[in-house]
Image 1 (cartoon, rainbow, N blue to C red):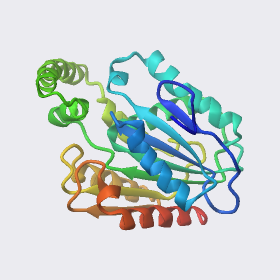
Image 2 (tube, rainbow, N blue to C red):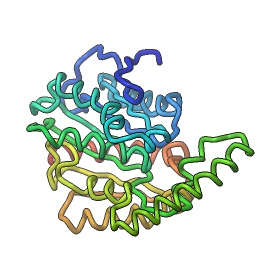
Image 3 (tube, one colour):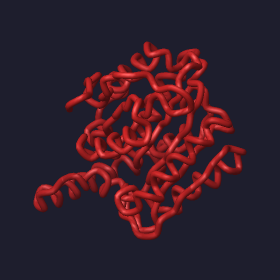
Image 4 (cartoon, rainbow, N blue to C red):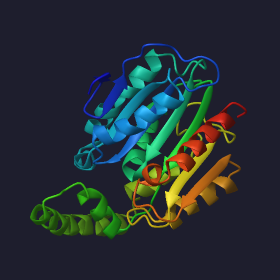
Length: 272
């Protein structure tokens, strides 16, 4: 992709030209929704460059096959991002970082990064804020199948994929219940609620939840419950709820309200 350097299958970094100054973000890390094309995420990058011209965007994509790979492969895909952030001095307290997460796929990728960074001793960025768009959800068989097949366009292939996934996921669900394990999305919800989700995270770190009542992949009640839990923990949280947007379509349907909320949550980071 023009202007970006690929660090791994899932991580792209914009070629840094200038260093941001003042209170603007130096870096925005965008964790895309599952199956999102780079051209889709690029639209958010373009808008960020309009608002904060000197920002360095980082894109992390979410592939469906990522969930079938082993732990080692998953970590290998996201580890180059941890190395890059460390080499850029982001964890030395001198940079401003905005983390923008889309859907359960993006939330899962952030959780993977968190697992890697949790093993190190990092101070964290100077200023930090989180935006959770259409996430985190909860575990249901229907939502899991929809999320994994939504990017498959040919009808016959999609129906066949739904059939196969229904069988496989049912086996996984039964196994998890019998072994009393945790579903991946439940682990992800806990990670996002932890102060170790990213170095430098504090209760005062601003968190913005953006979601829609019409979202059929991630129920608004699932996002609201996570918001309520965060608020109960004493975290600095805000939310914007729309009533007419499909999954991850909030910025497209309500661009003015969306980007105003983004700028407002970053402004709060200055006082966190």
